[in-house]
Image (spheres, rainbow, N blue to C red):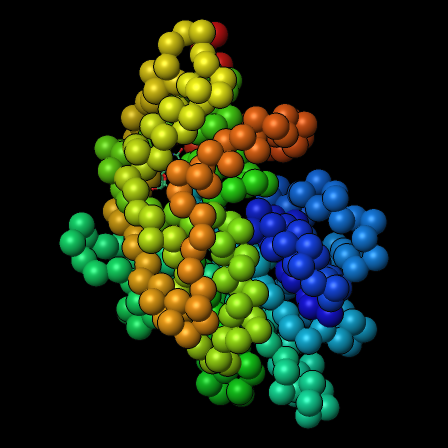
Amino acid sequence: MILVTGGAGFIGSNFILDWLAQSAEPVLNLDKLTYAGNPANLASVQDDPRYRFAHGDICDRGLLERLLAGQRPRALLNFAAESHVDRSLHGADDFVRTNVVGTFSLLEEARAYWQALPAPERERFRFLHVSTDEVYGSLGPDDPAFTETTAYAPNSPYAASKAASDHLVRACHHSYGLPTLTTNCSNNYGAYQFPEKLIPLTILNALEGRPLPVYGDGRNVRDWLHVADHCRALREVLERGRPGEVYNVGGRSELPNIEVVRAICALLDELRPRTGGPHAALITFVKDRPGHDRRYAIDCGKIERELGWRARESFDSGLARTVRWYLEHPEWVRAVQTGEYQQWIAANYAQRGAELGANS
Ligand code: NAD
Ligand code: DAU
């Protein structure tokens, strides 16, 4: 079996659903269920005997020790993290705790477990750490894309905490030989993404006739990858990646934010026309994110060459699928828009000079 941490979040839940659709191997999901962890994402597998859930914190060393000894996973995949850049700018304590101390705790307990395994199981064990392209910092318009050897230059507290976790993973392999794998991926989008992130926030605000907040001049560039392509990359790296190696994962799909927002508006104009005129009329430029990274771009040549992985979903088709998913899952949306979510939206956007209350 495999042990997944943070499996109730956006990417982790997509990964578990994909995994159980393609493999007979059981999965144990260890998740603290923060605001971003949602068991409803996994409702379709909750009665599947191959799926087990442990409610807990990756910083809890005693729990980790018990789970590893009791379940004897052949691999551990670490998705658990505080993941939202804007939240890290409001206060980074939880980011340091989960992303740095939590990853360290996992490494320590995984190392003790792995060292005690019999030789064939020790050979086979893998620790896969899911990380981000944000550790590499920001690019100018003509800079070459990030490779696995680009120097780390994290700019937000979130990125710094992920960079620290990547370094701990690297050191654990280098010092003790733990068979680690690290992936650094670009911006994901797709079903079950919490609506604090640009794409689901834009879709849901547009449906409610609220302003669509675009930071700064809207020309910051991100590389977009459909979450299903990311999950497939993780499976490939887990099975065939070389221990100790880092793999960049990206969609070769760079776009300025304003174009992403306009593309969502155009899709909604077709699928759910707005009585007050085109959805793009709701676009509102707001105060920029402090230290906002200008551009990310991923050179994913290594994973393409070594593992034969390549993104399959184009941004146009993936975005259309995603918009339709949010339209077709109003109960999921209603359930995540809790009191905590409303408070976050009020605090973050009031500070940016935008009132995101309903327009009509
Ligand atoms: P998410 O915020 O949607 O989910 C994070 C999950 O981790 C939640 O289920 C949460 O409950 C859980 N969690 C948080 N703290 C925990 C703790 N202390 N112990 C146990 N569980 C805890 O995040 P996501 O977008 O699914 O990202 C998953 C991973 O992928 C993160 O490590 C993130 O850095 C990385 N990543 C994300 C993206 C992206 O675009 N979303 C891109 C590249 C890399
Ligand atoms: O690059 C990978 C990273 O992508 C992951 O490591 C992070 O976990 C994930 O959150 C994401 O980080 P970003 O900061 O790029 O994602 P976000 O959706 O918050 O923002 C995308 C871009 O859109 C960014 O340039 C900021 C901008 N933005 C965001 C929000 C929420 C806006 O213009 N308006 C908004 O309201």
